[in-house]
Length: 199
Image (cartoon, rainbow, N blue to C red; front, side, top):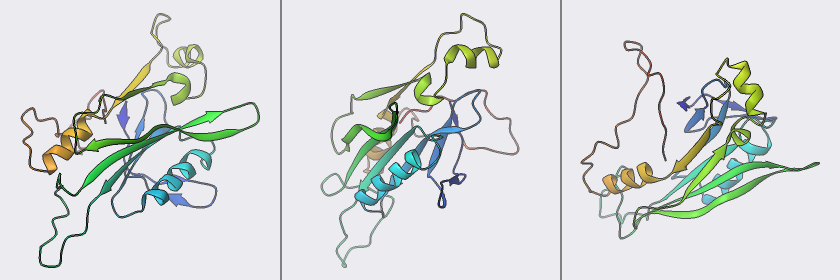
């Protein structure tokens, strides 16, 4: 998996800029979009997720929407936009996926309002098969990429451990294992050969 940045995604009516996106090795197009909504209302964020899936000519297969709900700060206190408070703030996730029938397509909710913070580490993980990522035959894609015939069909497992760690860190917990460090593109250094992205 490759983190492919915030480049615009064209829909039939306009261009949208996601907060992040992910591509699969050997596939030039992005298949997963990440949207973090802290100023946008939840209903609007979910509507935007459906636009990504239904209005991009089947290019975007999955949208992960992270809802950060921060309670208003009293006027007497200085707001800290980079901090979370376990007593008042919440973080939860929705995941929408492209599904197709014989004469229809839809944005199906595969994870609905999963609580990330506050609370224990979420155990939910969902998997994306090659057909979810690319929409075509794995055997054909494998041959086009020149991979050996015994190359196993890829499966992308997505969990929310790192997001949970980030929320805890923003509320004052330590990050003892350095889980929050992420690779940032740099013109000076070489790009990594691969990067496993976990939410």
